[in-house]
Image (cartoon, rainbow, N blue to C red):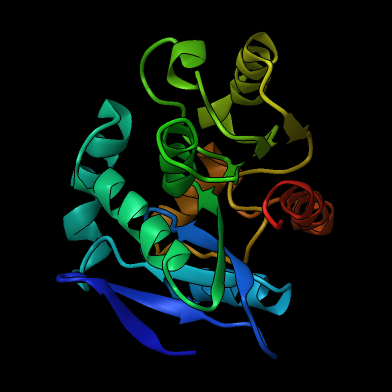
Length: 234
């Protein structure tokens, strides 16, 4: 699976399914720690399930600690170059000969916050929001016009208490197709094998329940692929 350049200064990891396309596609938006090996595995997961998957490096190869503060500011403000890059990745995929033109979006942690906002801003067919931080402002207003959304949160994540309920209420109000679930015994990042460096890892386990409840990952991924299978392919 090769590394590619979506645009000047925007490298990405591209995961291609076996066989012949065209395939539906997905943009993968990484956790705060950047395009790690774990995030590449998620792109590979989509390729194994028949999706052309791209994981853009919005940090441009720079260390994540140098970039995360700016990225978080953009996510909370709902504006900035990362949003432009997400749309650029979508149009890049849709324009490829091996893509059907239909593109989904998935984000984890910080990336889930970006995915939540981008779901209502760009032409994605579906979005998967996983323990994503909620943006500032009225959520129903932020999500007005959103594509169908599937979301997963952990009940042990103290930083996101009530987030799943808020998203579900907003999507109910707007009539947007959705599947939102909070897993009571799970914490942050339960869908993947992500790890945080010490001492952040220890703090994250206490505050966020980081990694707890990974036995729920199978159900979470089953819901994601069922939802994408309904909304993304032709």
